Image 1 (cartoon, rainbow, N blue to C red):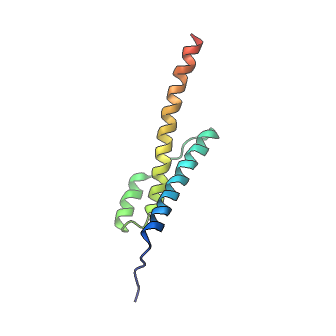
Image 2: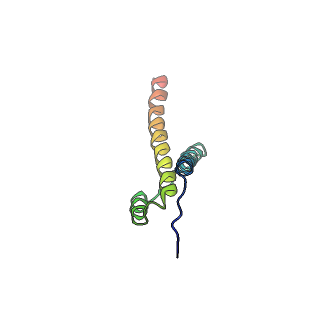
Length: 89
C-alpha cells in the first residue's frame, strides 16, 4: 500500500552539505552579532535519528555544522586576548 521513497544519493549528499553549511553559517552569524551560541540537544537528535532510520539527517547535519563552527570560533576568541595582552605589556 505504501511505497518507500528512494531518493538519489547525490541529492541527499547535496542536502546534507547544504544543511551542514547552513548550521555553520548560523553560528558565524551569531558570533558576529555577539549573540550567545545556541544549545542544541545533540544526544536526543542522534538517538531519535537512529530510531527513525536516519530521516532526521538534515537536522543532525545542521547541528554538526553549528557545533563545528562554534568550536572553531571559541578557539579563535580564546587566542585573541593573549595577543592583545602581549601588546599591552
